[in-house]
Image (cartoon, rainbow, N blue to C red; front, top):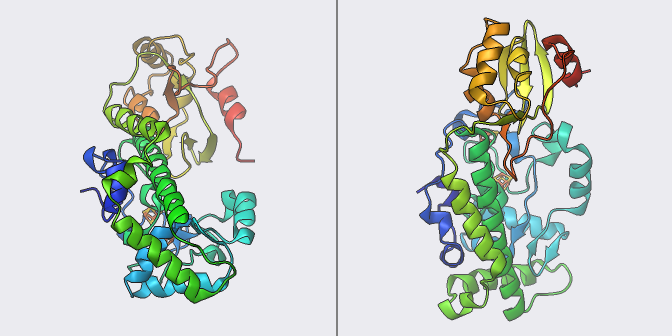
Length: 337
Ligand code: SF4
Ligand code: SF4
């Protein structure tokens, strides 16, 4: 089974069976034991765990019941006294505000943002079996590029929706404490964990709804699109252009999965106007600039710089105009200054 969905509560996978039934991508490029981002650009120790996840009540409770390093971390987080709610332990409000303002610069790079459940050493996540949907689905890189990212977004949305249903049900049938008494919250969260552990089919039947159904369908659709052929009509969506000496780094769907090309890549991109078929675009680019490699199309597709034109995967704009040369394109996209 894909490690991202190992140890999910049985009740959660009964609500959302696609999480374990579909074949999820094997994300070998996001190799946490040999993190490709450790040291540059992320801090070597905390890496992407510069984040405080919302921990649903029943997952906090299950972590507490393990009586290990994770339990101690959850207890310490409860003692902090912020974000304790019937639905779970919410991120500290001060961190949430800072995260919104500075995530572009501080994510992965601010040790003060280390997750309260993170621990030193190879284990890193003290609550790994009980981590939430965001932590399960996050990968810095994707073997299938943008399509893989789409699958993990669908996983996250479905798992998070199932988490919300189960946490809301727990809050209805268990009595949450008021105030910040540690023992009372530990008792409540562990009661939620036991409640979910013993959920009956008739309990879960009341939690299914059209949103869960739609998200189950979305995950199946995203998985089926993983190995689809590259569409014939493509447009361009570049988030950033970063000069790398004689070459240029292009950023598409994420800064953590970009690619470096010779600058003649702009001669190729200039041909994708959102109407011209891919074969013709490549042919014309190669005629205008012999150093263009047709294999770049696959890489540009993987990193989300070339996008399909269908609804939901739309390039917001294409190229066109006689004055668009590789140099003017470079100026237009260069946000590095
Ligand atoms: S998911 Fe996080 S720890 Fe794992 S390889 Fe990527 S940045 Fe490193
Ligand atoms: S819960 Fe675990 S995986 Fe998620 S941010 Fe914290 S330490 Fe990292």
